[in-house]
Length: 413
Image 1 (cartoon, rainbow, N blue to C red):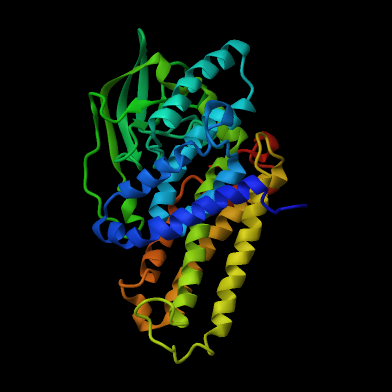
Image 2 (cartoon, rainbow, N blue to C red):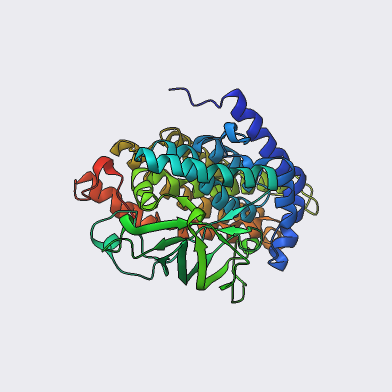
């Protein structure tokens, strides 16, 4: 098994690393302190063509597949985790419209329509710098997801009713990326079917400035402060038919057939771990501005530093294998490994970022150093639905016993 990145992957990884270190990192503290959205980071992403990272090359994008996206996201997170976490929303939308949809079963007429609609949307991203947010969060509607579906048909607080020429959308959802994304893509259960589930779930593009769209509330979280996520409220919002990001029903089917989608969140937290490790070493060796030189206990801290490295490398090995196996209708063993990798990263990022502060001592706890920010951001890993630790472990147990009832082990969350 060869897990070395390709030449093209190395080029994109290098681009992500350069942006993270030279541009994102120097600004991250200010955005965290002020809970301000990193518009400057997104300007850099746009300038470097990374808005089209996951847009297929035939549409003018960089053509990154799922694995390549995750490798790049890991690098971006080392500069600003909030930027990487919100960038994930946009890239997942591009992957869902593009290469993942290409591997899903569709009727010829449905695929032809999807091809026509996505070509326009990809053009907007590549040529006009458009950006997509994803308001997917806490479920509020009980339905088929609780009894039959593992992933698709999750309970969302949004609905869409069909009318001539489009839909009328109502409801609300927790929305990241609303400050910068001109287009928001919420999943909207509709009246197209008779049950609350994947067969009736729409995935529509809604301009954030459309009449009836609002983002109320305050934003003052513990970590990931620069994501500036708020509730999205839809009040009788008209959405035209051609706003479909995915054909009706494909959203739920895709989430069941490609559960690796949720593993993409872990790339951000793998990057946070690496940043915490690198900066702990910089602090201990006096290379971080303001750190004591020399650190009087550096020799005694050696075993703890080694333990941090063991945790990072073991989590990375599991994660890299998992993303290399990502495909539509992956075998049950691959899905189980993906769950294990996701939980491992969730656990390790908290442990590693805590340890980074501990071994650096009291001064390392000061906000003048980035270690404290990493530790706060790390807490968001356990909140990334639907594969939170408890759910992923329950899924793994049920799949191992053959109790989940999902083909290919793709059920979950």
